[in-house]
Length: 463
Image (tube, rainbow, N blue to C red; front, side):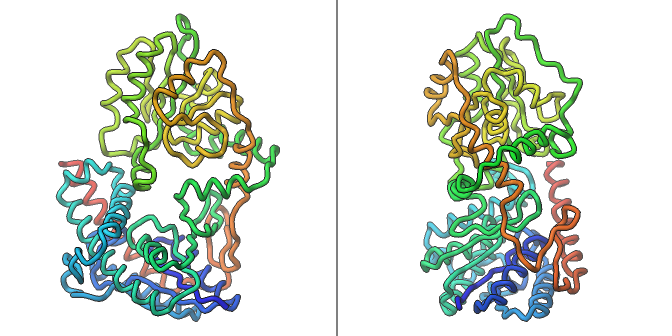
């Protein structure tokens, strides 16, 4: 029998709550001694309660307690130490926490703000209201960390588990486990709404994830189905935006076409410092590259998902649009990613799945910066701009082997860890063998937070 602490972070998010409870119950059924922890802050700010509304806290806590009780799980509330009536202040002097810990928690706080508001860190600093939310959330995470540390140290578990572990109040638990030398696992839900458990790393640890991918079978038939399906609008929400009316620009006067695919900067900014690219900003790399290779027609495609980013991501590319060998397609412009891949001699991707799809299509693929695919052997991954240029200078750049691309397809379509208390019906994750009690509490609490977030977004637009 093992002792396991399962921390339910952000239980107002449906999949977090379902997967964490189902996992805890299954571990308990297998004979493990399971302790479930949850945030018991009186008026704490977090990604699910950005205004620090005490009613949201009470609804959230009651919702966890009721459902955990139904499953006969032992629970402990944490994070209520300190002055409950003063959420703006930490329970202890922040200086009593190691600076490395404080930086990690700040990174977790920023992750939530970036994802919620689709705004880059440089702009968060300019908005006073977001700075206040950041400060309150940081202090809530400090309180939770201090209390959870005491609980975990007292329980002395053989393993610690939490869902995802990216945002501050879930990341706190991972920091504790690491500091105490306790093995940990993280939970997630994959693209097919199937639970998946990562042992010893998080879902956003690209090294751990890719090691898992490289251990999977190579099923060419399955991979063919996957990559052909991604080109079809009904299988790929972004493919729906691809226009059949798109016409490739003429290559007359150019020796070749190189298509460049950008990705959502906010998604990768939210993943923290381990995802920081060694390269200059995208527009600077491409400006210098396009000027260096005037005989090449460069097609630069923004990702459709970038349309929702509130920060300015377009102005840096304005000078490139004046170059005769450049065509820039914005997030909402008419374009067809797959026709661009098929008509290009080389494909360049910044943190994009397109780099893998290009490999599968038999095209030489170059990936710039960190990604979930940079160790799969599907693309060239130059560490510097000079080495990137050296690749472009080659007469014939050969495509990479497709093995890693096939393994990625298997990972997306087949990999996962089934839980007996969870099932997927009609593409939706649902509970099995137990009932979700008093779901209205979670709905009400989420609605309160949604109103708060929407007001903030309107305020940001007005500013």
